[in-house]
Image 1 (tube, rainbow, N blue to C red):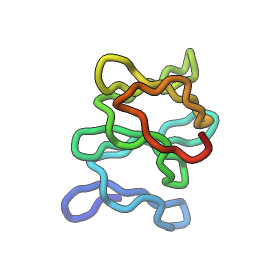
Image 2: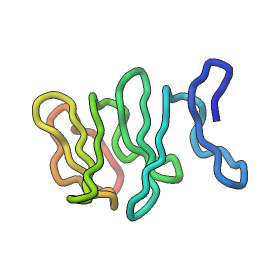
Image 3: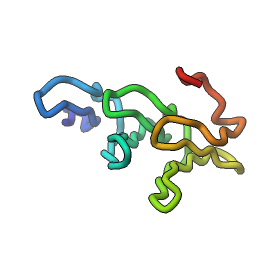
Length: 102
């Protein structure tokens, strides 16, 4: 869904609000579970299917590798890597943040 300023949000199939309209764009990704790649002010991050932040929208680039089943998040020279189950493999200094369950 979009608001009058063309910011993106997300509703469930039942019409319940998952994400408020605070993003430039969102992309639904298929994997072990649904993940959402989101952009806010030209920075990218990852959310789960319930709208919970997995990786904050601070990265310059986010890409999923189906071959390795891992998301690569770039912000600076060294990328960060997170698995679709939410486990962080590598977090670069720019990507260090608090994520529940770590």
